[in-house]
Amino acid sequence: MVTSCEIRFDNNPKATFQSGQTITGTVILTLTEKKKFRALYLKIEGSAKCMWTVTKGTGNKRRSVTYSGKEDYLNQVTYLFGSQSGTTPVQIPAGTTTYSFACILPQQIPSSVEGKYGNIRYSCKAVLDRPWKSDKEFRLSFTVIKAEDLNLVTPSLFLPAKSEIIRRFYCCCFKSKPFQMCVSIPFTGYVPGQKIEVTIHMNNQSNIDIEGTKVSLERGIQYISQAPRKKIRFESLTVCEIFGTGMRACGLGEFKILLPLPPLAPTNMDYCSVLTTSYQLKVLAKASGAHKNPHLNIPITIGTIPLRSSVQAPHYDAVMNNSIASSSSHPSAPRNFNLPPPSYEEAMRIVPEMTENNHDVSVFNPLYPVWNFGSSQPPSATTSPSKVP
Image 1 (tube, one colour):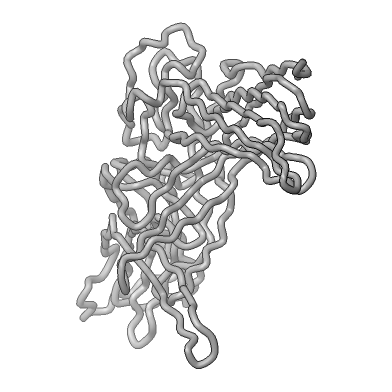
Image 2 (tube, rainbow, N blue to C red; image 1 turned 45 degrees about the horizontal axis):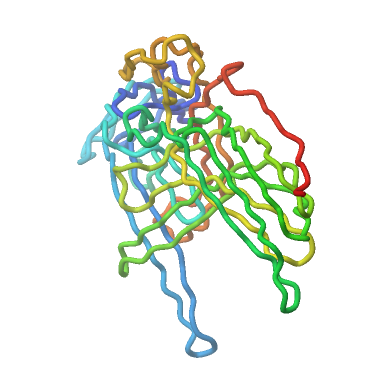
């Protein structure tokens, strides 16, 4: 009988790879006694999947429709011994036997993403083809990162962004004087490990206190089904948040909040038609009482290599080195950036809701590059609000 079958990657204990990189590893088969098999093969797969169910009606008119979509990126099968025909069983001795494998990942494949109604997932599956018995499978998922250099996306990422809202609060039939909130950030391209410096200006001419401020980063995933027809579903998730001061009635002031970014999948800029990821900064002002809370959003882009101008280093105009060495799983740090290579950390755990048998409902937590900016981040600063005369 089989004692164990283990898949290991060479020099990559965190099982994280760049698109275009060559994966190498071994399959370690351990038997307590000699045994015959038709074959042992390794299947390396990568695909995007989505699925959700919509139920309408009641009673006898109640019906459910399941929407799904799939897009394949990788499907390589390597026979470690035996063949697909399996006409002649192979006898494997008792003990441990090691088999090597290699696979080149395509360049243009999307990064791993896990969501509630779908995912982009990559895995290795070792399959023992046993005579007169069902196949025995051993699976190991791994993370793929598509390098996204923010310096090469669009020049607009280097520019400041600003958003403004004016709100009047109602009490019975009367409305208050205006409350004005203006939010700005110095640029719109960020990487995990960076801090978003959010400047909030409030001019509260109303008689309603603003009890506090919440700054958060929202991740959106858009799922696009293919069967039974095209349908779109959107999922929003708060990935990080921080709370700040408010503004009393008839108050005026400005303050800054630094929002640290956790491990995040890059913004899905291309390569996937089943699901896309996007991010936006959300700033909410908590009004006292039962009044509706004013809020505004600023879209941002998450990449894997930071903007030159976002790093306080001596040489901002350095030529970027974007090459990825095939022997390394780390994105290359831009030259003359005073930053160490990023570490890889787990993202927020998402429990999927896909339920069909042909969909993988297991929980997998990808790892994403997180940069250590150290003292290159701007210091936090606040100003005391003043009262409007």
